[in-house]
Image (cartoon, rainbow, N blue to C red; front, side, top):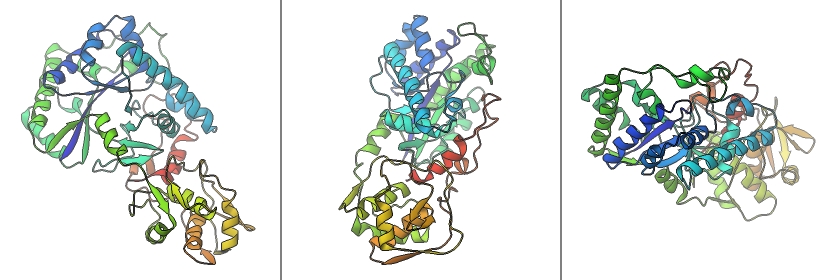
Length: 437
């Protein structure tokens, strides 16, 4: 059975008229007895209060409220201000701004708990993912870190769910056959997020292109209004949305859930422990493929790395918690290197288990990469007196997440022309050590 989430990018803080669509779409779902997930921009929450839109507040009270960033495409966007070398500075600024967004959302809409953070467009930042996790938000939706089957992925300490189907694709002119064809595709997935933007049902232009494309084109509050769609077109969209919800409700292949439902499932059994007697099995899997393992449990490379450090330093077990990837491209040996058990044990004393994985590790008088150290540590813990390091790739294969593997943010979406993507895309790949399924 496929879990279906109805998710709404509720974002246009420039138009009071656009807020009408929020009410309409919220009511379509409520009348069907379906709870949707309305992901709110912090500045929209502020404007709803300023506009005295109590009707929006009432309509949303039936549904789950989540986060769509503080300012969406207000520059500097979340990607623009986190594209800096200092990770802690970037993460702390995300926490500062997004905490203010949550405050505004709670003040306007009364939302007590935020279960999902949804980035706008292509504004995906590894620093934001770590920040949301630290803020206690369990899910990152509209991501590029989700396998094709929609099974989800842990990455940067937060569970990722991709968007699967955009209602704007054919709800304006689609018919029942079109909708049923969509259902057949969604049914192939373990989980599918069906999403839409309420503003798009009323306007045939994007509010942020009009006001925030590459730069802040207007002063705050002095926005340009977008062109309205013909009323018949909007009505047809709502009719198809209503029919789509009805079809999914009556199809035994689907189960309608919310982000909070998914969050409950992924945190029900979250106690993962690595003991010394687990490492022989783990070592065998990593020798076959340097990749997160699923036996005896779901472990990222960082989980296993930290476990080796703890076990070499005399602990009986490693209790898995927050993990981190790398901040710089890892060192790779160019020739075979032999390291001894004493050298590996001594090096472990200088490695932290609550920090980013080092890109280079000194073992004896030799420099080795983090994957080299991990495989050598496994050999030593499993009883060998020395380990031979053979030159190899230090990062796992990212073929299952091609948009992470190949992604580049510069020059995309609404990003400023001055946005260099100096750190974000590369560091996103370097967090692959935190990936697990």
